[in-house]
Length: 436
Image (cartoon, rainbow, N blue to C red; front, top):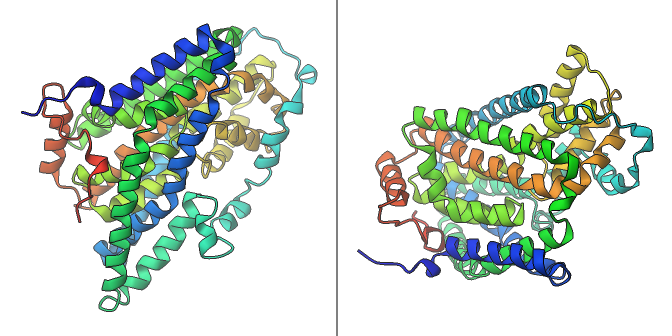
């Protein structure tokens, strides 16, 4: 059996980078505060790859599914699952807020809060209406879908491209061969970029600790504890039983994804791991077409970590500002959140935008109360991102099984290899050529 030195494993390097970044940010904060470009640069490089990789993966996936009926059924099942998980996440956040009451006894007068720091979030929130969101999916030009690196416009273009190739099967073979070759090249480039992940994690943690520090938590620590507890409960009480019901152990999937989870933890963003998850989930035995459709869609429609945060943060503001909410008001708030939790980018700060968008249509809660959360939002974004990426990985496997498009033998082999004592064959799967 091949013996791999620990320091050669990417997740070990990322973990080491995080530890060194925390130490530097704590003991030399002035130096640590200057290292944010390391994290921004790494995230920017990966974000550069997302749009073309998603396009190639979805087009190749649609042509492998061939049947338009199968594509429609896959999308319908995925969206149904997304909304069910979001509803559970919203309810769990609400229950956690009622049980732990993180904002109780703060007695804050919202009129005395400085709402000027919310200008950037309010500006983005106003553009999050349902109609505006639907229109934003349509790019101004075909190439414009790749301009900003947003997933949904690329998803739309990929669907149209894939359907067109399905309608033109013989002449489209050369186009598919070209797209397949481009996909392999893109994954090779991604493998080179991922070697910088430890440096990105180092810069992100050094900046976070230097800029905010432990003292910034202060009296808002209870809200952070509540969010992490709610997210842990969602994973343990919702996703783990669903995984067991589908015949696999969630903890083995988490170990299989450990590198990606560490990168999400360090960068507070789910975006850097999207290309790798596409390859890793396909390597698990999930059909390429299902992976290509469900995972990118989940990045905009299945943000369960954000859903938990929305109810918890809204109730925190109500408790902190002594605003009583009736059952009907809470029900309306949950209905609004089913919409505002969708389409938020999986990056740090998107939770605040979604929260402002929610409060702007609920007059009973003061939008200025969001100012209480700005200082600690960075510490809560990790929990949101981790929960969402775990949920989306599970959703891909669930839908693949429902469609009969999951090689269960392959799934057991790969997750068994990721378990302690296994061959650990999944270590570099995302850097290898995906199977057709």
